[in-house]
Length: 439
Length: 158
Image (cartoon, rainbow over all chains, first blue to last red; front, side, top):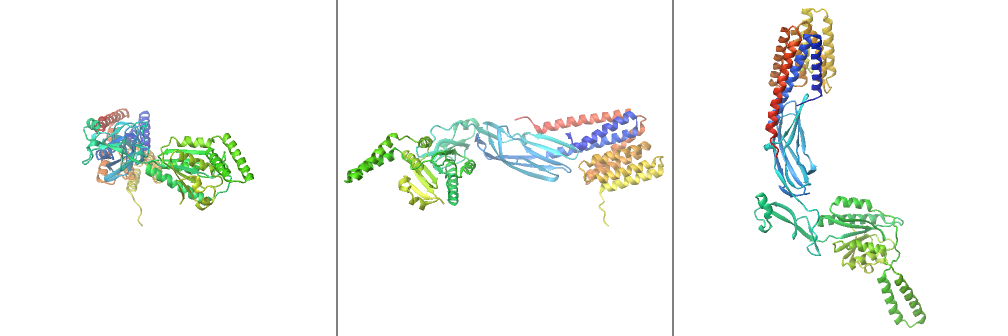
């Protein structure tokens, strides 16, 4: 039991009066000090009696969303605490959480003033165990105070404890084969098709498939446990966003529509496939790469940070690669055989010579190498390319060509379909599988 | 006109009446001192009505009056102690139920015993030792009771 400020002041006054009475040998001062001390002791005794009454009235009922989870899984805890607060007192009660859990949200404490009838607090919160093992909810802490005193007690006897949360370990690394096949991928949620990975463990319910019983865990806890396997979904797409150059004017409304479309696609990817992969480029410059981000908020924050016109350090202008030059040379060879005019033939042979010189000097651009390095480790089968198609778009042609070489389906999304149809980068020349307008 | 009269006002009026009667009957040489202390106490009682630790200030203002009265007559001082306790409990709202009044009566009884002991004693030392000893016993009993109480509710660690 601790004295509050007022009681501390009275105690000091009592000591002073006793000292004065002893020094001056004054019975009148002794009477004042003695009665004051008696009053303080009486208040203390009264507080202690009411504190015991409050403690005796506490009832705790705690329930967990699940009794067995894996490390890092968030689960809901609901605790109903019934308490009667005696007159002239305030009480606050808080949960004692097991070590090794993190509270995600919700309330773990409550306060109440005087309540002659028992009052029930409902604490609902979510926790995430960060270490594995058996975790005990060891009770509640009750603090009761009035104007003079304050007392607290840890209620950890049997009626206030429990239940026990069993946290199973989770590996640090994903299994090497993340997809069942080249076209599918395992996700940590229920799906029509089951994968091979174990998503969760739970108690057996009547009707569960007996083949899914985890016999080791069952033997350990003397209770039937079943495994819940991961779901299997198609591979999520790669979203490529081509941002406009800051040096040229751009249609703001079209850009806003494109931003909205990209955000929608990211949200869809995160919801459906549990994560999203976004590659942000501007011309032949790779700006930022969001790799398999599971948190939608972080993806959106990154988009919010990057989705605006940017400065380009490198530019393409009608950039050709070796295949373009070879195609041009073949076309010139065909034309030279068909045209009898010597002057035209001379011009074509001159063009062919220039093309051959260019082919010999042709080098792979850094952007192409970067795109190849970016795409090769990804497990995707579709690419969604968002661009305003302002100015030169040969970097997009290069990117699409790289994607097609990896047998990826490429879908171009632009807010300006009519402009694109009349440009040199018509859907046929781009090499994309589909070209659609953004909403 | 309805005045917002509360319990502490009633006890204060009783204290004023008691001091005036004492002054008139006993006719002490420094009669003005009691009236002055009474006025000071009344001012403190009024001025601190919205303060957080009001009880401490009321007790500080009341003790000089108790000492001054009991210097002349122990029973007058005891009366002032009773009224002061009534004012404090009423200010705390702790005179609302029959149980509260029983607590107040118990305090008055304890104060009566202390006053009787002091009245019977000629010097401070013996009653001071008795009060100190009783307080030590009380503290020890409280400590043991609290230990047993905590043991019951804390339980063994899981």
